Image (cartoon, rainbow, N blue to C red; front, top):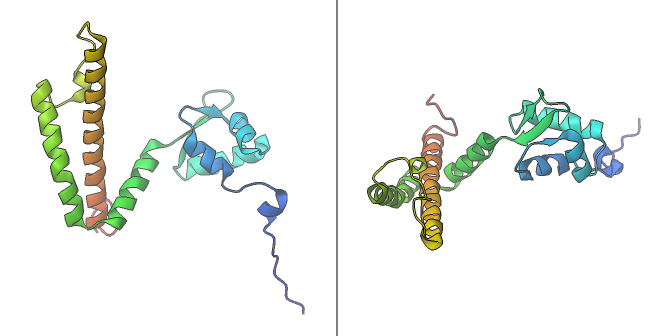
Length: 169
């Protein structure tokens, strides 16, 4: 019996990039139909829909099947988990804690400056001066980024402490 190995994978032979639908889904910032994603990926609509359904089942994307045709978007929670997992792999628990300390100090400064613990409770538009409004918007945005980073590092710490799991074994 003759043994042989196929040197060309069927997907490559078709000329389709197996990662195109995945990459486009993760790159979009608002929901799109499978036909719009198919066009960007240079896929047939049916092939794109099949891949998008698989990505939604895996939790990488989300499908809104109530709209016609269905609309797909990336799952922000998946991206956050991916970021936290990367941090947990690259840093020790002690290094993660060390990175959080200055962020917590920054958060405390913002809370003192604005008299609240919630950046979404602060309005940037209470001033007539355009420059002041812009500066406040920038500061509030930076504060929200600090809060997000603290939450991301906390998730990474949990992953690092629990061998890649969120819950202890």
